[in-house]
Amino acid sequence: MLVNQSTIPSLISMDKPCKLSKNVPNPNGYASKVIKGKRYLHHRLVWEMAFGPIPDGLFVCHRCDVRNCIEITHLFLGTSNDNVQDMINKGRQSKRLTEEEVLDIKKKEESVEVLAKKYHITETHVRYIWQGKVWRWL
Ligand SMILES: [Zn+2]
Image (cartoon, rainbow, N blue to C red; front, side, top):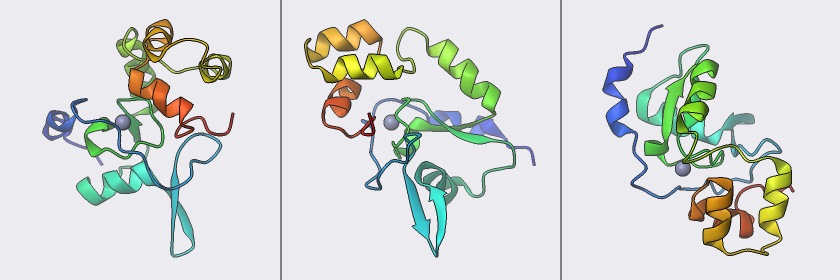
């Protein structure tokens, strides 16, 4: 099934802060929700509730790189290629952290502002790491 994506991009914006799932993130960082004994990824459920079933082979990606975020305006549909391309496009503003980098942030040896600049992530993201809302398993 082909999706007409042109109807969707207007939704994508980073005006709103991340809305974190109340469900505990799994080891990959994605929050899942169990419905009638079946486990679903929470952000995919949110997407499906808004737009209907996710076409085969497509992924619900995060504009904000916060994997347990379920803020609908941060989600977009893409292929695994888009996911990679999106990360590259974003480059400066945001990037995936390595475990070493997260552990460094968790030491709290530097201020939120300094850490956000150092790792090219948002200050909110730094605070979430400190509060254990993301990367809790490290
Ligand atoms: Zn988000």
